[in-house]
Length: 393
Image (cartoon, rainbow, N blue to C red; front, side, top):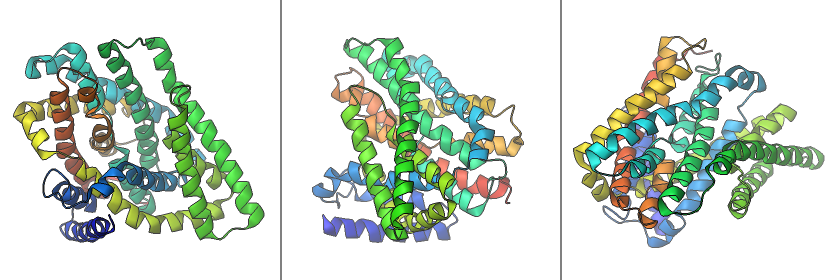
């Protein structure tokens, strides 16, 4: 595994450098490295690394979500809160509805199977979006109107909403008794409990950091380890109560920033250094999940469906920001920022096939194709438009 890890790091760094030289996001190069080195192309990665891939990706995502939380200011959240709440569900509903209506005609599947596909495709990818928004916050681009914060908050809740809807639809298909009303209650339950858990954890960590006057490195290690435990807590409580660990992780950073800004900045600086390594792991290992052959099976029809669904999603996103203080270009930037897909699609794309859904192979193929089409194009679009359209403070 150590040799595979070394190859991943070196090739990831090289791809990042080359793509930045071409004025393209480095993460696109890392995704391509993952695809080429993964088990579906050249199969360079050892099985041991692939077996722990999900855990490594989760740790990397925790690092960037902590950085996001440590940049979330209360006044900015108050300003964008209503719009973020709308963006957490409206774009996904629009995209899911388009797929549900069109997929039966183009792919020859049932409406319920189409709805399951719509739930999988309608999630935005925090793995792609969050690092880019943190980059804009660091550059002070769009921060005057809270645009990066808006997209950070909305994209995190978006995944909670989509996964709950997906589980309801899958339960309906497999015949598993599902109380839809109770299941829908998991959305606010997951959000509220995630925030409460994160707030309590953040406050306890703040008190420990102040009392024992820990060095920045030890505080950073501690906060990462505790955040990993929050994701473990979510897993063991899954069958009893819903808790969004990722929202909790962001809240940990937010509370520490509120309580002691100097501590938050010290930890954030250390996390920025850790992110150099974590970023490579995250995007290369996400790329390794992409099966080119499966995506190819979706063909032009699958690509057309993904494209049309994105139009529906974009309309939903634009409606959410229509009555805000944002100008036309800033609204379009929000629309583009909601294009990338990767994390959720890679995580649950194969679940319908494993659960015995008749068109599970088609659903997986279109899910993989959506990653290939939207993750690179979305990242490039975010970087190019953000640097030109977002006002620099």
